[in-house]
Image (cartoon, rainbow over all chains, first blue to last red; front, side, top):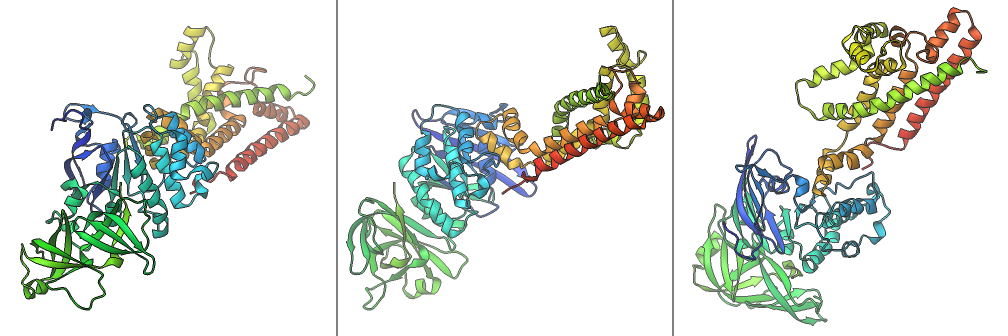
Length: 367
Length: 225
């Protein structure tokens, strides 16, 4: 595909076979924001990322970055790893143990491949590395080491950064410790990030764009919100099914510790206080936390009941089905049983009430 | 010279020092290749490198004598080039010592390179390092214990060589009369006092060298993560 003037993206088509596994993936990723690559383990996510970095050999394929040809194996073009302006954050930090934290950052900075868009002081401040400078990698916690690894990758002045499940090796507490730093990178930096994960919650929190890999193939790609509700994707219709909507905090009720937020489909009460300076937030609504009713129930613990329209009912092999609901400009998913669909006589075009369990909604800052 | 052993001792130290320096330079690419290759020649190469460990030094010395002698392929070329023979010369001893001590340099380095984490090298490449740069900036510093081991073992092994020197170098004072030859001479002429002092010196040097190696490598575990 030909790049439009001024449009910067990463286009690739890779094919390789390793034993039983075949990667045969082609798509485009926008060079802005965070692009998620989601798939189950064994879907080929890491292999694809290694192809983009030039680490996976031998390989057949093409890679164009912002209109420049980085790889074209039929044409005999293949940039070596060090000639690709990428930052790579691996699953494990891979800090050099013969250097301290500061030495690891120097290593990257001395080899940077272009003008430094991001000063070292800025990187250190963004990732909170100041206190770690003289430490040896062996003395850092997993989360600290991964922050240093992210900083090291940013200091090479990359055109984009590849992150291969940077949180997967950490426990939940460490993950929660790093996620705010990733939110900051997302909000404050213009360096595009390609973020591989098998964790839908992470993807929903961080990414703007999403590519779904299944069995070595890119089965879907597009804006995060639209891919999540596209339907027909087995990996996104199971337990992980859900949607993301953008919302705005309106007011805080201190008595009940609830915040009222509004989105195109209505208003929702969410538990806890959402900072007033967060002008926009991102809500992750899982399909299993949404139920449907025809009439407003009199007694329910559910705070949020919103009128909606059934767009489509997606049946699968399970006893439950996914109901796609339109609320304003947004679309959310509800998981209900086949029996409920039959007994409530639900069908596309019907007006129904969506009950959303407030305590289950996750939110994160939006950029 | 107030002490009769000084000349041979200095000559031995010089020979061991030069040999160690040359060996580290030669063994680095060889050990790197052995640690990375899947070539079917790898096992042959490993056998060739290890041969000096099991061959009697006299056998090795005999073939080196033929190779380096004025009629030998390498010796003739050297005579044409410089006008002097390689056998019974210091230069000839250096060449013989490099072959004799080769396994003691290659094997520790190969072990060090094999224990390197390939993932660290990949990280270096993604940070903009060429293969060569990654070798010098990551592989080499992380293989320092291997280098200490290779240097100490090559040095000590060369210092103690006898059979090969006798075959290739003979016993020329100031040129090829190294400390082990001097000890043999002293014993032959029943000068046990000289033999004692020379032997004790060699014993002390060997002990000190090995002690240094173990001390240097003690605080440097190969993987501290």
